[in-house]
Image (cartoon, rainbow, N blue to C red):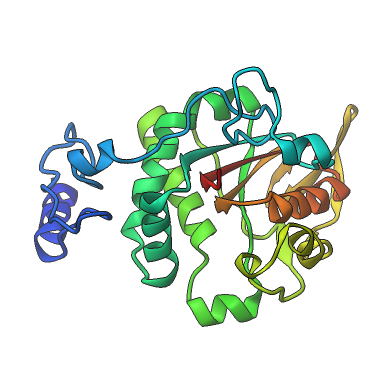
Length: 261
């Protein structure tokens, strides 16, 4: 009861606003109420990804195609991935405000929607840990937080609350060891070169007779899921997946908030 009272008081003092139109959202007064993250009319404007999509990265493709042009041409280190939204003007605003305007409520919205859309998929992939794409310590100091980690924490929270799935967020396993140029400033080939050796995963520990897995805390991972905000060329996620597989992890999937068409 005390928790509910505190929750309502916080909503009165710091009301949530719609991430697109800025309207003050209704308060969540009962446990059964849906979390008020976005107004109903703005939610209708979002471009949630649907089939058909590339079997590797989920980018929209013609019905007769199985893979997008980039995944046909490049070796991918990640096994497979999915994005929540198409990266149009609405998705761009939500993620830009999260990343550069410190609108962390937007991460809660993304995490909630990802939990609703990807809970069954996370179980099918047998994900043992969520790995946010790390920022270099210099960029982290400048921004104050890692938007991928904020999304991962929200996704993990809502997975447990809505689907009863406990998948921890691991921020120690993967590190960014080089400060790279922002990917948005670069072309496709430059993106790949920019992040090629930027990441390192901790050394592996023996897991069981069937293979090896990376260790963190008391757990041994065979399968992990990278979390990031935007999928553009896939270069960053590929570099992360390569580092994780070099450390002994067998399967690396990814989930992102949006994907550039």
